[in-house]
Image (cartoon, rainbow, N blue to C red; front, side):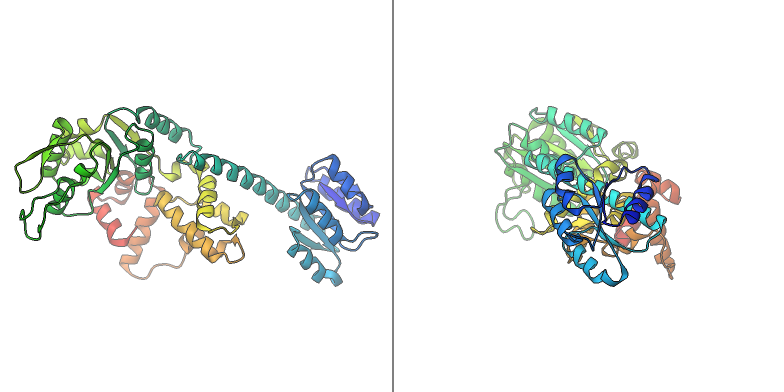
Length: 433
C-alpha cells in the first residue's frame, strides 16, 4: 500500500485506517518520491491526493501507471474537484474518494481495491493458462476428477478400443471425442459425427449405413452412409441410448464383424472404424429396463469415461469464463466486474458449459464499455428469486428448473419431483430447459 498526500494529518489518518484492517501502508508527503518507491518494491494499491505540489495527483497517476500498470490507484479529492477525479478514473484510476471521509468508507474502498487487484492477477494467470491449454488443443479444466478422465482418454486414444462417454447435456462429450480422435493413429482420417436422437428410425438407418437407389420413396440415387465415410477413421455416435432395437442389432454387427449392408442392397461392405459413443442417459438404468442391449453395451464399453457436470467443478468456471470471453469478444478487451463474476460462480449451470457459453456470448455483446456487469446477465442467473409465475405451467417450469439446478443428476431430479425419468425429460424438452 502507498499513500501520497502533502498534508501530514490526512496522511496519518489514512495510514491508521489501513493498518486497522491489516494493511501495511508506506506514507509519503512527497509526490516526487513515488518513482523511487515503485522502483524498490511492488505496490498493490495507492491512495493519491489530487491537489499537491510540485506534482499533482494526475501526474502521479500517470507515473504509477507507467511504472506499475497493475497498481490500483484511488484518487483522494475535495468536493470542488470531483470532475478532475472523474477524469482521473478515465485515465486509469480504480476509483476516487471525497474528503472528508470516515474510516469505514475508506476501509471498504481499500478492501474493494484489494479484491480488484486480486482479480486482475487472477485474470492474467487465467489468460496465460488458457493460452497454454488452447495451444495444445486440450479441454480446459483444473478439476481433479476431470483431469483423471482426460488422462484415461489420452492413454486409450491410440488403441482400437471403443469408448463410451457419459455426461449431462452440455458437458463436452463431442469435444472429448475430438480430443481422443486427434490423439489417435486415425487423426489424419475423418471424424464423422452422428446425433442418434435427431432422426426417425428409417432416416437414421440410412444415415448410418447408406441406401441403394429405389430402396424407399425418395431414394433417387445410391447414398453412402456415415460408417463408410468414417472408414479408416472414427465415428462419434451421440445419444446412442436413443437407438431403436433394430438399429442396435445392426450396430452390434458392425462392431463385431466390421461389416454391414446398405438399405435395399445385398452387397456386404467391410469397414474399419473406431467407435466413440456418448449418452446423457443413465446407461445402467437403460440396461435394467431392457431398452439397451447388454451385448451392444459390452462392445461399446471398451473404456467408460464420465464427464462431470459444471456444478461439480466450480474451480473451472473462472477458467471457462476467461476462455469464452476471449472467444466471444472478437478482439475487444472484455472483463467481468467482481459482483457479476461472483454470481456466475454461484449459479448451478443446469445446461453446463453450453449454457455458460451462451450467457457469456450474450454478456460480451451487451457490455459495450468492455465490462460485463450484473445487468448484462439473464434474470434467472442474477437471482433465483423473481416475480411469482402466474400460470400453472409457468409454476411447473420454474419449479423443475430450480430442481434441475440443485439435483445431482436427472434421476435425482426425478426422485425429488416425484415423477419418472422419462416424464422429466419430456417436460424438460417441452419447457426448453
